[in-house]
Each structure stands twice: as structure tokens, then as C-alpha cells.
Image (cartoon, rainbow, N blue to C red; front, side):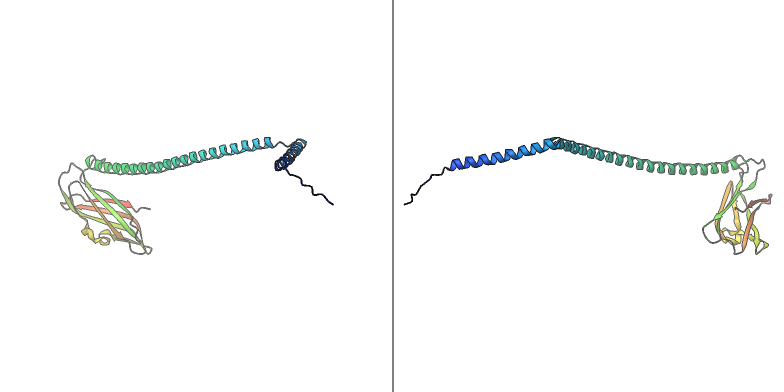
Length: 232
């Protein structure tokens, strides 16, 4: 007859035994890993330290790059402001030079009336200027007549402006008063000076060479004539 044997199990003992086995396995694994590291000469701690140093250096370089980009933006903006200021200064200087040139021309004009280089007084043809007006064969002109200040009387008369040139290979003369009838034959009346300005158009085939201005006072004084070459 068989006997039934009843054995009592201790749960605490079993748990302690399991923990001991797991701990032994972990320690054995760690020992094997350390042994492998020692045998291979590979130091994970040094690698982590080096990686951290590289990460810190990278952050430092990124910060430096941001600072340099900021400085570059400031310099570029400063250079742009300097270029704009220089352009404005150039424009101002050019405007002042043009204004000075105009003032010099006006001063020379008034000096020619107040203190003329020529000793003789009386009526004078100061200047005749012609330039293109942007139209086909179109021109703008300016005629200036003067009288020196020692003649303080009003002078009256008529000016004739003849444009000399060639028409289809033959000599020809055009009367500016006919090309610009608005001037009423260049009748003048002034004490010191008088300007005539206007526009005209040359006929097709006409090549201008020079302009002859004749001025005759109505009181019977001496007539004045002056020739101007056509501008190139």
C-alpha cells in the first residue's frame, strides 16, 4: 500500500531563490561586458564624454554663426544706407553745380550789360541759341538782344533771323519769322534787354549751316549784324 507524502512549500524561499538567480545572471552579464570592453580596449565612458564635448562645441559654433549673421545683416544695412546717402549727396552736388553754372551764365549776361567788354554802346545781339525739341526736324531757339546801361532810353526796332543752308544740294535761306509766325516779325521794344523764344521745324531736305541775325533800330541808328554757326 502506497503512502501519501505531503510536502509544504515556502513561497518566500522560492522568491529569494529567484532573486538570487536573476542577480547572479545580471552580475555575470555585467562582468562579461566589462571583460569584453577591457579586452577590446573600448571605453564607453570616454566616448560619452567626447560626444558631450562635441555636442557642447556644436552648440557654441551655432551660437557664433547666429552672432556673425546678425553682424553681417547690420553691416549690409549700414552699407546700403551709406550707398543711398552717397547717391543723394551726388544728386545734391550735381544740382548745385548746375545751379552755379546757371548763376555764372546769368552773372556774365548782366555784366555784359552793366560793364560790356566792348567800348561801344548801343544795341547788341547778345546770343542766339538753337537746340532740338524732340520733334522730327524740330528745334527750339532763343534770341537775346541787349543795350548797355549808359543808354537808358527805350530802343525800338525789328530783328531779322535768317537760317542759311542748302536745299537739295543748292544754297537756300529761310526766314525764321516765317517758320515761327507767332513772333510777329521779331518786333522789339526794351530798355536793357529782351528775349525771343520759340519753336520751328525745318523743311525736309534742308541742311542748316549758320544763322545771321540783323537788328535795325527804328530811330535810324546803326544796324547790328551777328553770325552764329549752326550747332553740330
